[in-house]
Length: 216
Image (cartoon, rainbow, N blue to C red; front, side):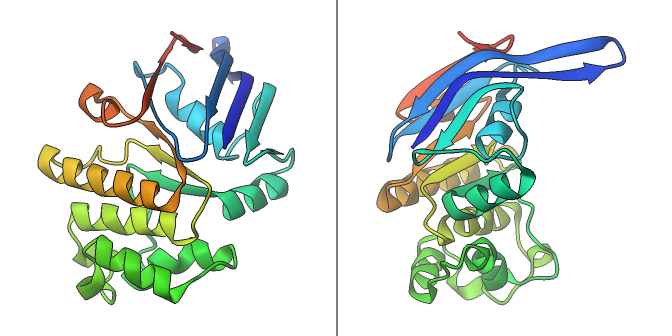
């Protein structure tokens, strides 16, 4: 479902070029889950952004669902819209939209909005009674569940999650994580998740560790 081959990425700084990823290869089958760990600055979020098409690698290739990631911003945006669901640590909900509209946002962009599936998701996520509330009226755990619902509403082939429970207390984070894993399994999506937590990483099928831009 996701194939990263010899990924290389550098950034220019005032002190010269800094290599963030140095030949990383990683594959994720349909329905598989992988936890990506590593020290701060090891390249975890950069790799996730490249997998999502939010940025382009300097070298190597990204394939999602058997298709190469586009070369232009527009091509990458189309693939991301059609095949990828994103869950961020900061939730990134749209303040002016209520829960129902936030959940439906990406599915509508992809032309795959399914009211019955959204209602099922809202029930599974404990959001059915909150659909007409706005993000500012929700707790952190509720906002994160909305973000997960948004990522899954379009039934994407691949879910990419960057520290999805990082802003939650441990108990709430465990509940949200377990729910996300169950919903991912139910939809058959693949999941690549960045986390600092060995405990959360152990909940996934596989564990990949980045060190100094390489898989250790």
